[in-house]
Length: 251
Image 1: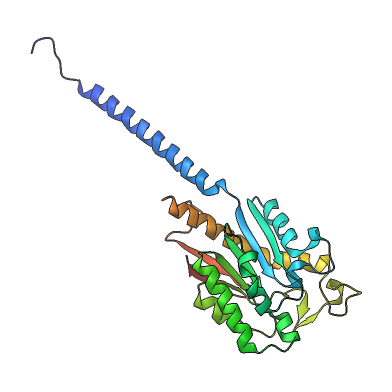
Image 2: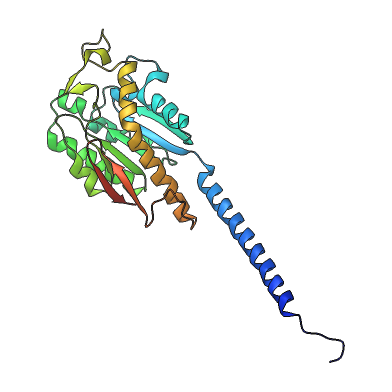
């Protein structure tokens, strides 16, 4: 019809470019929103253990969970670390308080028991069965688990059975073949609990592994939001450092 003209090719091209820019801007906004959702809530870590976790003989701020929280926050991680340690706990006592010790919002659990079982002559099979039950129940709740061993106990098969992270020796750096360095021990304690410096050494050795677990939780959150950040090594695999070795564990 007279008076109506078809859009010129150059105008069509400009219009398409405008639409493309708007689409890219909306996509970028969506990515930022999804990433913000994943980062919104602090990652909640629960340290579940006996007196070595509770921090027998030191102030609360000098326990390993408190020092771990400060170390992670200093590196920019948005975390909260809860101390669920109870002095004197055997693995059976720990299992009896499991539900109270592990809140619903737990993302990561660091599990360390067994020293009191050995001290009181608890059968090794019973200790392992209790640890197995703890790790299984945590993984059923999709909680990332770091299971710690100690000389001469090796619980790596329990960790492997449930795709948990294994830390071979809780006392790495403060003891050799099970014998603690006196400079890391409370001078007045006959049992030999760690002092503030001892827990600081524990944290310095363990924190890289915990950082890996924190990244794992963060990446899982992004995955649920259908977004993959560059730090989440595609195709969804995270390197898990276990003190003396490194392996790759699928989320």
